[in-house]
Image (cartoon, rainbow, N blue to C red; front, side):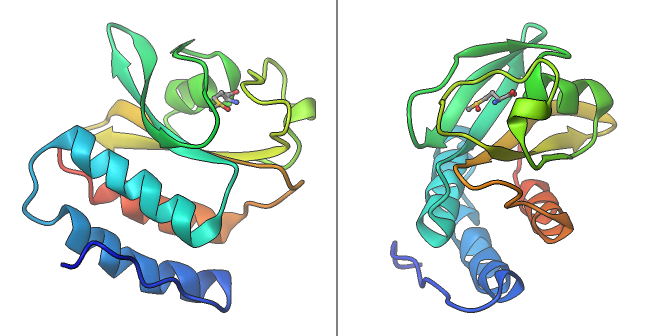
Length: 157
Ligand code: SME
């Protein structure tokens, strides 16, 4: 496909519905994981304008920073630490309306207020997480969870 993104306006659902086929087309037939994660992060950032969106991948029992869009971030996160490490440990998506109230939250950016983290699971094993941060309180909901979980399903390892 042409490497430009059609940006949707409308409801959150409409935005994801327009974006997901484009993400599928961007990564279709491309076996390189880093290239695909980079394009997914860029597409999400371009559509939604979130503060930070990117991936952490598990390497030697730690989450290690992968492709992302946004301000510089912490490089390594241990299992159970912060929202990302908790999502890994619990093997489930976590929606945090106000990170100040999340015990052990890792503040990579003081601007970050709400967050959603979606684990990438294959054969019952967590391989990494998709992390999204916003400057706005309570930005993420079950709709984001549903679509972001669908997006991480598309990633081929
Ligand atoms: N806030 C996250 C750390 C990662 S960054 O925000 C990019 C956490 O508590 O897991």
